[in-house]
Image (cartoon, rainbow, N blue to C red; front, top):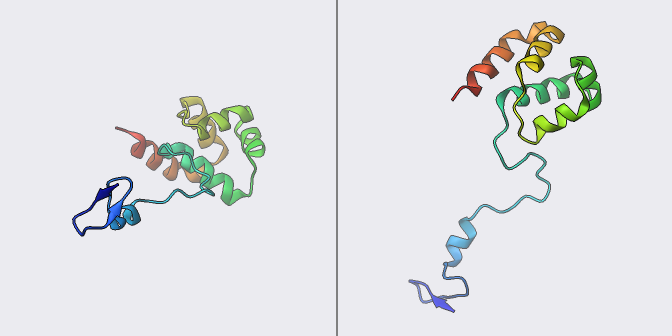
Length: 105
């Protein structure tokens, strides 16, 4: 047991206020802990707006569904996937370019 500045006992050496300020884990969180690649985030947004599942999106892009799953796991989309995205959704060219710029270090 530790005692904080206010004289309150704590098992872990933190005040009650400090423990309340920590972010709580969200058990329903569906996004990976890493930051999403902007291009993959765009792929997911287009997929959602078009009402497509991962398999349907992969088919429209001419990719294997496991590739989309790898992108969700943190693998960055390659040039061929970006070209196919542009060919499949030409009306989204500005969004694809913006995502590519955002992906630059």
